Image (cartoon, rainbow, N blue to C red; front, side, top):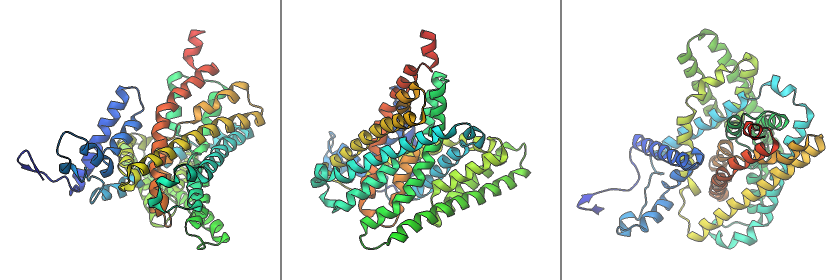
Length: 448
């Protein structure tokens, strides 16, 4: 291309290092801008990642003041070598996220929560699953089906989308919730219930996702899987994922005996084994998230301290910038969709938000009522369970590598990213509102 007398090639980025740098810089800029205007950094990562998607960048540049033909290919950052970055960063980020979540599940803390939190966890998880399944499985086709004809979806395909999106809708982002609680210095029964529920929520989502994936695959590939296979395969995947995490946990416990008071070497050992656990899970077609959650759970409870978990927290920011920016760049799997299809997937994302919000509010209220929880828990728990981030996007992205999900993977990824962006805009203020209204926020007590 000739531009101002210069020969410029905006085709696929040929250097893996350059692709890595572009993704990192875009993510950092997006996060900084988001924080400046009062939004969570993850929103900026995702939005600026989306700008790197060939389809989106092509549209943006074609609307620019320059000759449209100059930008006909968009910024082809999600091609070629960047896939090497993708194959490294996505498993690494999912492994770290899962390891930290597993490390937050300390048995000492879980012992005192009682059966009431178990009831609430189930109801606030199963309610959004059921609502999202019903809305997408039976309502999305007449609403947006005519705009997604290029995907050749039938009724069973929409039910499969509803199943996997419903399972993903169980997850709550612990980091966002904990950040709000810390900001408000919240204490009380509602705060204790929130912490217990979000600690268990992601584990429930991962297990539910593993269970519905087999059934969804059978719907998408009609006649190819027996009922016993639909039950046996996810059960085997869950069992062996847990076993893999157990093996790596004891490896880490053994290795760190020789690394006492050696902080840098300990961090490297933890990081190496966490990433290796995710890599082995990927090769064996097991759950990266479930294996590393088991890994973190066993380590923190066996060693009776959180130093191994804290060792990787310091590098989370770098990995998260790349992870969420890549998630945005893989928006719709890099496919070139017409405007109607794009808008249809946005509508599906909004439907997920609506179904998930209704389920979280209704399910938490019903569960708290059944468990005899205080009125503040019944009225305001749902406000704090809306954030979603890493696990949700990670589960959606995992569909791209699962056999049999090619026809719906890009739709689910796009819709989950849209729903995550919307949730990141509305969830933190709503969480603050609920905690303040309950009277457990420090600012409320000062005012009163």
